[in-house]
Image (cartoon, rainbow, N blue to C red; front, side):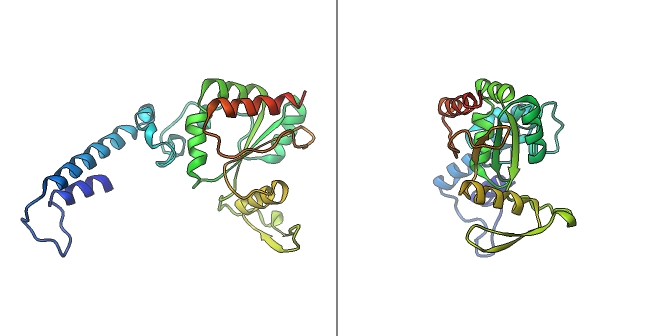
Length: 223
């Protein structure tokens, strides 16, 4: 809608209060309007989940298809992971299956997180390796959902500062900062079933081969 509105404005069809109706439209504005219409067309086609591949060049900026109202047969990012957002359950499954835990510190508003999910996690080799070798848990540090009253508490950080933990996001953001000394997302952490760090955490890693090598190295240390 914004792109179409921009095109109509450049063509002089939509006017702002200071614009003069009927003014001559320069060729440059016409070319830019055409570009805006073409861009709107790409976005319109990409609305349907089956056409998402046509707007991969915008990966990370528009909401991913699994955030939409469309129905999906596959799980998030196409990964049939055992766990999504429950860390305690991830630890339990990790012990039961003797698989390391892959913690995905992410955020709903994290562009680089979406790029990793859409361009790296969807790679067949990466997807298969995660499904086979890890218990995946995604922890959203900006989740505004409030914790149950009995789960809220005041946490004293390593620096001695007191912080009220009232929301899901505050819980996971504090968990990340206190345990891994990182406050940026995405952050990927691999832990053993007894919650021991198996490798150095990594952040945004758009190179598929590099990310897969890190996963393999991390998983091998659990054997």
